[in-house]
Length: 145
Image (cartoon, rainbow, N blue to C red):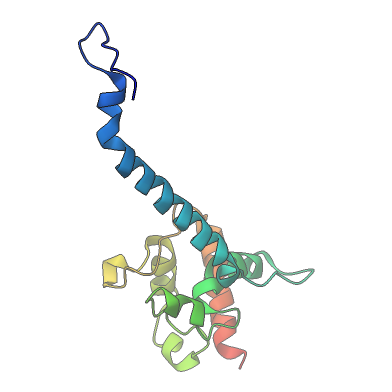
């Protein structure tokens, strides 16, 4: 091993970095594994493509909601992998007990205010008009059985 070269500060770069080698290597391995794992699971999160001529609400639903709620509102096994139990949007009896304003607020502000933190907030992503269209689309899903 070569002798340490002292810097003007009185420390050796090799000696400073030596204790950090293992943690840095471990971090690199962990980050690589996470990248491989999430890339490998990307197929689980694929959502169906909207059909040609789909409405804006249907495109938004399939792009933002279907991963957890399923393309037809019945829920998704994919969400269960992440220990999330999304609401079933195809159940007309349940949705009939909820006002449009309630659904609007859940989409806009997420589920955290009502104790359902698994539901993300889309208020910073969607306009109020888009959220209103999603509410109407969800209502249509619940009656499409």
